[in-house]
Image 1: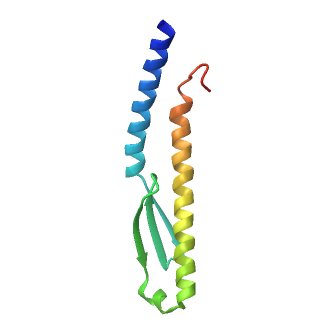
Image 2: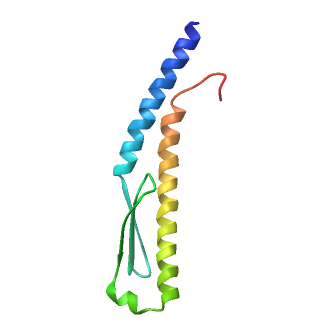
Length: 102
């Protein structure tokens, strides 16, 4: 049963590492601009939208253009956040070998 105890300790250590990483990811910000800087989106690496700013002149553009540029900026920011999240999570979880499970 020593193997099960070691496996449990490893799993608990990995869980603590993942929880610590999640806190760090919430503190890391990613900023994306679009429309020549008219749209600025900020997300954290946990994928939470934390800021959106628009240049006032940009609001004079057509509604469809404004919507499209905002959407593109948000999608780009979320994609970057997911890539960073996945990359950092891979570093943490790959450090732990769980024989027989993966």
